[in-house]
Image (tube, rainbow, N blue to C red; front, side):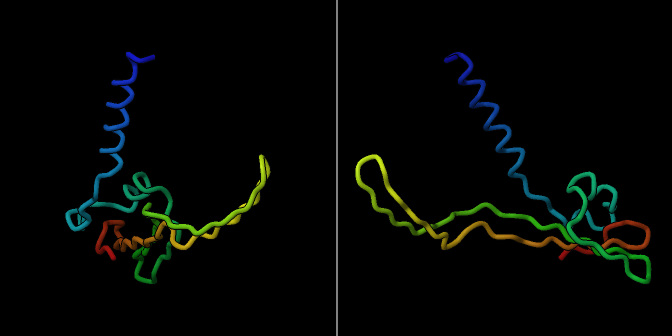
Amino acid sequence: MIRFFPLLLATLFLVGCATGRKIDWSTRINNYTYDQAIVELGPPDRSAQLSDGSTIAEWYQRRSGPSIGLGTGIGHGPVGVGVGVPITGPRTQVMRLAFGSDGVLRSVN
């Protein structure tokens, strides 16, 4: 088991690096299609097709961040009762992509 530990650490490090990459959306304008977005990001959470044939699509992204909670409890021996209330938690951000009638990315908001 101990000899596999370095391999496990290296794998976790590489996965962490791969999932932490940030996309430069400005380089994708006029070079990225709606179909590519669906393959990469999955189906949008909301989308609408406009009368000119263009499509606006939104993806909700949860950002992990620090969470703070407040709790209290009482107990006696092996039995106890506690209650907690979250004060802050992960934030949700909306990524809105606008695609032209040809399905090519035109703007990012």
